[in-house]
Image (cartoon, rainbow, N blue to C red; front, side):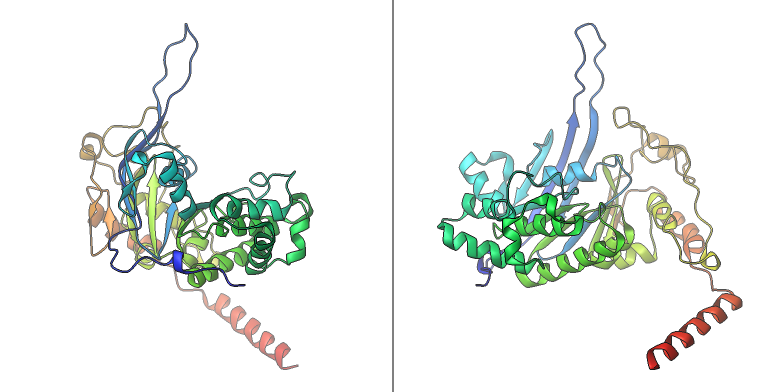
Length: 371
């Protein structure tokens, strides 16, 4: 049995993004007692416009509390936006009837961060993976069992694993079960909410490679929420950098890593660990903590921590405008910031001693392989 691919590919003639947010905001109100002062709402996502292209892998990155996971859930209509619209294939998800929304649910799936908490411990793997098939596709039990077995093989598990329960698997295997469940409804877009952050480093590489293979095999569009920049560079086409509920930079992945324009992006890049002390570089200082999303700063939300901040940054909010080519950045002084950060982010040349040790190691490795 092979998984159907017809429904996974865009229909001929369709143009534009597969999924789009238009001025989307998501605020959470804080419940208070009768005699307590009412607290301002938490502005988790604020006025975000974003387009996800067909067949691409778009990454949402930022610190914890930046709003990237909330934005991902709003894009899938798991959370209703406080303001703005989410458009899927030309349809406003907020205006769909329950029946029409159920049809869309088949196309939009999610892989959760915690591979154990997202699986029902009382259900077998066959029941977990087969549930979307039962909900969205008219099949009998025998056909459903065959489809579950094929899905398990697709994600690198054995069909006999279907009779087991989540606690009988390792973390990486449980995440593969979550991926199989996401594939079961034959989706067109999958959101991965930090799908590898809870896994060991060696297992992370396996899951990332699996997602890459599945994307090309079934023509999927991926939206990956993550804070591991090494993972992002390996598998993404474009990256949207979020800070305090807003997108501050959007660019193709190679351009972003080579020359980050926004000072916050520069700080994220500079925080990437290096493999050896001789390769260390000077890092832009990112002082202080992220402000409260209940009371964000005026003007540019990053100005309280930005080493390049000026009076204009405190007074006027910079729009997310086109910088160069496909790149967008929300900074009044992005040209000066990019030029100032280029030297500090350049990887220095390794010392002679380090180069000599590296050559000796490579020679030893070659001799070992020959022996």
